[in-house]
Structure formats: C-alpha cells, structure tokens
Amino acid sequence: MLTSFFSKSKPFNLAAIILLMGLFYIGANFTHWENGFNWLEFLEKLGVLLILVLSLLVLNFIAKKNELTKRSAYKTLLFTLFCISFFSLLRNESIIIANLCVLFGLRRIISLKSHISVQKKIFDATFWICIATLYHFWSVLFLALVFFAILNFSSAFKNWLIPFIGFLAVTSLTICFHLIAYDEFYTFSDWFQASNFDFSKYGELRMLIPLSIFLGLLIWTLFQYFSAIQKASITRRPVLSMILFGLAISAAVAIFSPTKNGSELIFFFIPLSIIASNYFDSKKDKIFKEIILATLILMPIIVAFFV
Image (cartoon, rainbow, N blue to C red; front, side):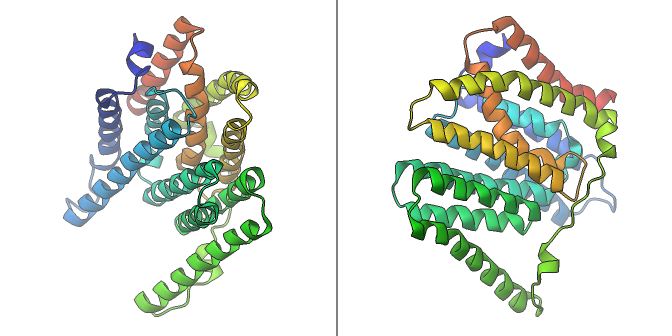
C-alpha cells in the first residue's frame, strides 16, 4: 500500500523521492542541448538539481523539528510531485534558488517560537528573503511573514526595526557587489520585475490538469488542517497559523509573478505539502487516501508523456 510505504520517514523513502525528483529533472533539462553538449551548462544544471534536492531536505527538516507534520515522508513526496508536474519549473533556475532562500528564511521565522536569539533570527530571516528577491522580486511579499512572526512571538518595539536593517544590509551588499564586479550601480529597475496578469496558459491541459488536482487537494485537506489548528496547544497554534498565512502570501506571489507557466507556484507548494501531509497523516479515509496518492503519483507521468 502506498500510504503504508510513505507513512514512515526512513532514508530509503527519502532516497526514492530524491531519485524521482532527479529523473524528472534530468528529463526536463538534459534530454536536449540547443548548441550541443556543454560542460559549463551541464555543471550549472547539476548545481540547480542539488539546490532542488537541498530544498527538499530543508522542508523535511523544518516540518520535523517544528512538528508541523508527523514523522512521515508525505511532505517531501508531495512537494516533489507538485514540482515535477511542471517542467517549466524544473527549468527555471532563478525561482528554484529563490525558493531555497525563502525556505532558509522560513526556518528562522518558525524558530522564533523558542524565544531564543530573537533579534538574530529576525535579521537572518529578513536577510534570506531579501536574497530571494534578487532572483524573484515578488518573493519580497514573504517579508510580511517576518512581521507576522514578530507580532506572535516577540512584539518588542526594537524587533519591528530589525527587518529594515536586514533589508538595508542586503541592499548595500548588492550595490557594492555590482560596483566591484560590473562597475555599475544596481538600481530599482534592475531589481523590480513587472507583474504579468495573463493567465491564458493556465487553460492549457499541461497546466490545467495538475492545477485542478492541486486545488481540489487543497480544498479537501484544508478542513483537516483547520481542525488540527483548533485542537493544537496554545504554543503550537501560531506556528500552524503561520503556514496558512504563508499559503496566502505564496498565492499572492504567484499572482504578481511575471511568469505564468507553473514555475511561479513553487512557493505555493511548500505550505500545500505541509497542509496536505497533515491529512495523509490522519488515520481516517484510508482507501480514499490511497486513491488520492495514486492519482498524485500518476499525474506527472501522464502530463509528461500523454498530454
């Protein structure tokens, strides 16, 4: 049974998920070379694959350490299935790097619940999210998550000022780097990416099929997640609520993104995989969960080879 296999988080399960991610990434990036084989391009794509695998491991670490889900492999499996359903995502190096930076920021944000080294964690979270904006501008919206965490965990006045210091630090370093490396000033126009509200590609079968399934999964599993929040302890409830707030922010990032080819949804897949994992971790609807999981596993294969 699929649910029995992925209900435990063991090295073999994780290795199988990483292998699945690697196979689809290779299929998306290494099956054709526009200008013949190039070692530099090969190493670059290999590096991006390692970043994608690292994102998977960081997500697994965040969920386990903060008890966002049970100790199962569902969150990593779901994140992988979501990503490999869009070849455009697997080919977008910038957004994969931005996603890893956001995950690093999320790790520091959630760790604020311990009330240890609060100011350092706020600065680190802001720093990583600002780095992410250099690769995908609209990930700047995740700074709202930093302020949400400050409000919930440490609302001292000086803590509200730290994100602005972190932002200025990244701005200064970026300007200095461009002056040294390129002998030119880094301006707002270099940083900003204009939004694109043309959603016509979402109507294509390659996007419509996975999007419909993912949205259906989200609606179905949200009820379970709301129930989990209500039953959670007072100390755990703000962390679970933060995932919901992150889901709303990631949806906004996707809407304002300059690309509308599926790659912009990578940020959305982080909270979705955590929310859906809570449903799969529950003991009810075993047969229905088997059907959903089988559908999710078959979907990227069908989209890749038959659509």
